[in-house]
Image (cartoon, rainbow, N blue to C red; front, side):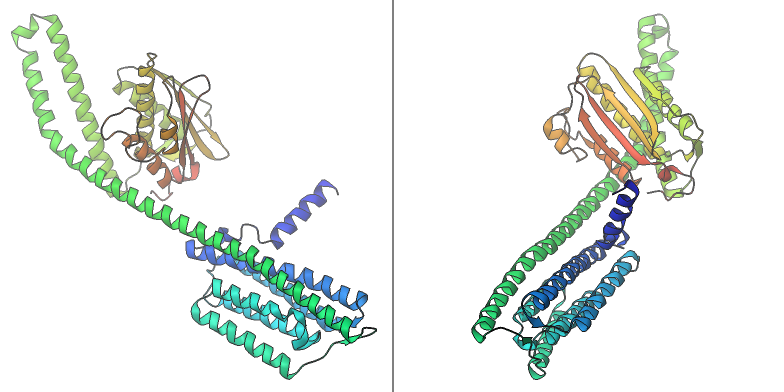
Length: 454
């Protein structure tokens, strides 16, 4: 098979199997409904293939005369139904409460037609009715399940009332009875295998659905926690404004006193104190400005390279010129929104890297930024002792820190949640040569001008 033919074949096979059918889901409930519909589609493909093989074997090998034309017409109808079901899954419209019920009902009617054409109520494969009933009990609401029960019961009554015996040539009564028992055995085994296989798949869908709901609940709890932290930070910033201003005035008055002017060492320490107070005031102002931008929806346009250069320059300026190796391969002037929350995220990661490197006595950190496949990648490395296994396992959870401080670990918690709101993700790993790396990965589309802010 040529490479082109192989690609075409795999593409057709993927479409017929309904691959990625849940991508168009409008929510978790619709996703589980689409996955369940997909299980019915797979079961229908198996039914079509199995019926083709069974009909041909019974007609040509076992001496039974079957009406091939109408039976093949029913199979064509099942194929058309499957194709229509696949097209339905490609649409973004959510599956309704009647879609699965209608699919099972049509399968039941198709089975009834095939049974009528191949022996009616005496066909040993009437046990397949139980497959439809059990699948209905697993997939459908109570009223729909009882509707399937009523339909299968009515169809079997019709088979009894309008029984069409199958014609067998060259078979004795005992041979016919033995073959009937063998057919019953095959039907029961087939029921059991299909039920175990597909009910297990459906339960796996339900477990994924429950896991997704648990994840959404966890996110909601984390976002509520972040809102409370934001309110506390904003309130603290307002409260700190007055005492910081008072300290600045007092230190300014002390600076002009003769006792300090005559002692250069004390005067230098006083200047250092004023610098730290100014830094605190800058941080408080930044918190309040960020809160105002979040409420007012104001944005500032920039380019990706200029934004990252500004972030690094601001961090260096407020950290007393700490060692930071900054590299980037960004050349094209990509226009973006200068997202203040992303700036704070990068600062948090750099602060953590700096603290870790200080523990190892190196005192430096490294930052690399680049764009790969329309995604912004920012890697921050340090020379510290690295993350513990427990920290890596719980990366991004609140109060998960290697520093041993009460309330520690909130920085990375905020990093993970801010990136998630921007459609990105954060990951961490230990380096083979020592130290650790934190990778920030987010789509460029989330920073574009006009993109919805989280």
